Image (tube, rainbow, N blue to C red; front, top):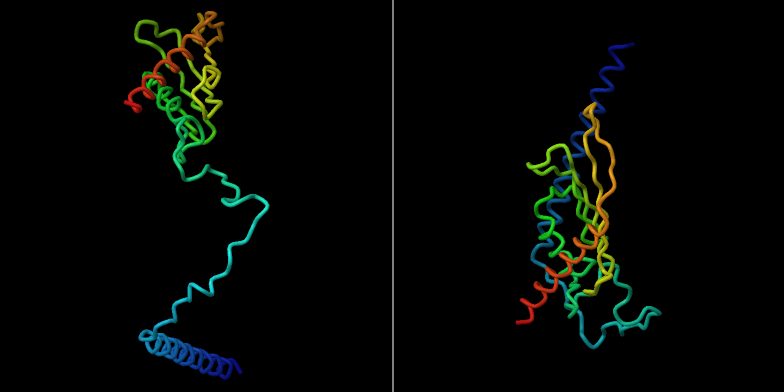
Length: 182
């Protein structure tokens, strides 16, 4: 009985191999025969008329439009290009742990200066606008120091530190904008 079942199975497998080969060959012949055909080109007079939409001519652009803007917010990123470049330039000393050009968020990693290895700083920068304005950038600064047990402890940051960094970013952004206009 087992021998009979084995013979039937072998016959079925051979049949499927042969039929699969026939299907592959037939498909290849059909594709080769269609290679010389030219498809008719659409007639411009019969093109479908442009439809009006509720969102206007260009529709809704999720990532900005394709035209360059005069305020520095081009189509490539979601925030002001000058503020973005100035922030990266100003924070070039700090190691960047995350940078999102569409959301306008730059997060630095902790950084200790060689002069004060027991103290470290971290910054979060938020670019809030596509325009180059004084309220278009916000900086949060965090400070930690090692205690006697060698653990990091949070400390307050001197007042005005965030504002000074924001001013440095804005000054550098204005320099970038001035160099483009010349």
